[in-house]
Length: 204
Image (cartoon, rainbow, N blue to C red; front, side):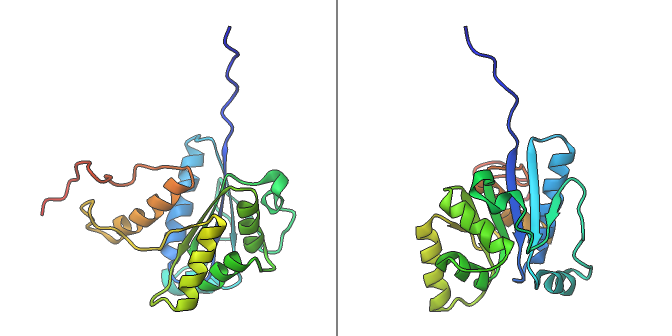
């Protein structure tokens, strides 16, 4: 006799927002994740922002960084009581979106003194998914070497570079090409846009 299957365990995801340019990616990801949780998807989402994230968020989006988002749990950047601060309760995936070059450097070299750095460290040491949505241009040799080091340590470096093969016509669609790829890698696929080989509504 086949043993009964237990309830599906929720995917535990951490989204870290740093002060790199690209707050629009974080806002879209948080909105999509909150909607998924509200619809009943088995998903637990925690998020944390760096000290400079609120400044960039307001400068780029013309609104303050939200203090709370319904259905998601926010942690202070120095709250080491967060479950994902320990490998004994490691999340399934950590997404840093957008990821600054200083955050990348801390991941590559194992430094940092806040919850974002700790979440990344836990993901690497526990062999969980760590997706770094890096946003910088041009890239110096230091940046490139840090990307190699982070990749060798187990992280996925996913530059915030939109793709345009799905009939992209709006800024939101371009943003979704990046957000969708990042969430794919985190184990939370969403059907935001046609994928390669699927029909799209755009006519050249």
